[in-house]
Length: 468
Image 1 (cartoon, helix red, strand yellow):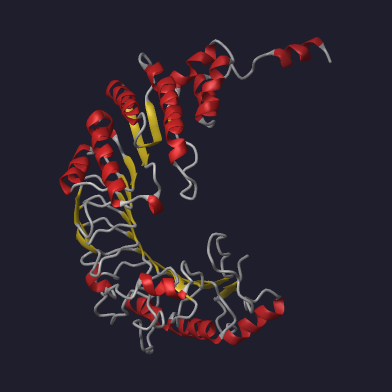
Image 2 (cartoon, rainbow, N blue to C red):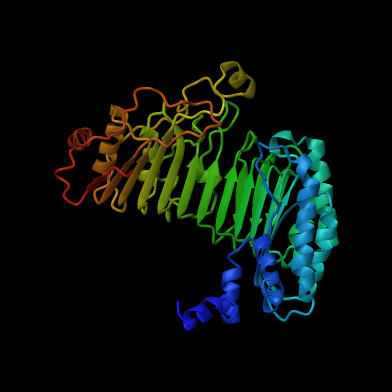
């Protein structure tokens, strides 16, 4: 090796990179590794104060694990990282474009709040996100626990009003607040664009009215609200609402002029009302609709297309997920018939139940009837001119599936692609084990039989797919 080659190897090429390129590299590391780079060279000591993206996260948040033994240590680690990364920026001229923090309510959370509040008060922060976890996970948190966590959240908000006023994303879990407190939080977080409430409420079977001028995405999961009223959300575009106990319509749609994507899932039980989408969605005219049934009771009532003309007028994509394998699929045709602008229809069939024990199912109020007992729909001849894609996940070479696809093909005169997917693998924690007799066509011969059964040949522009 020549002398020039040795000098090239010894040269610190990385430190000689321009600041913007060096920062781009460092910001791809996690917080701990980014902090360690400051000991590599004198120039690198300034790196923490120059970072434009700061992500400070606690360790494992898996609900299966016990959290209590790790909360103090996890928040101590977050506090240390917060001090190292944020207190060093007192005189820094660099803007924090993104600040994301995840920590537990409880031990040392007020100290974290004060540092973050001071940083946001003295520096320009473009995007701020807080994820606040609770010591006890969903399955272990009692109403008393949730009420205590709600008080802690209120104290946090009072401790760092500057930080909360700059928040754009907020994720909360396992909280019970007083209704005025939640309204106050939404008022303080005036720049909020994303809000997730997981197992949060303002009292058992309570009403929640949501109003916010800038909120764009709202997720409400596992709530005990009797009803959530979306009164005034002029910027809302995306709504996720999952798992409710209400005996009535769990949602009402007020002023949501920009809402285009709605995802609603529920484990239907015998006491749940069959929802009429024409009434349930109100004046909302959405383009993307996801309905999840968790392999239980179908909780949507098929309706005449004339009743759906307003709410389905702009519908482009529909995903009907986790339909029980015992259900007939004919009832889903009311969506196709009622949505003249629909371009893609996805049907997902699943036989994975969360609760299999019959006695336990009775105690929890699961229906003993057929899961599609309330979803009757008489097929009729109609033509649809916009549908281009049909997807079926969990397809089996059975009459039920073949007849359904044939009916859609007959109605959708401009159908271009049919995708037939295998039944998805079940999660390990689920009690279901793959049953014998799986009839997904894997061989070329089996697929040709499906092709011939559907009589695809006359439709030269139609393609049948079997994705891996």
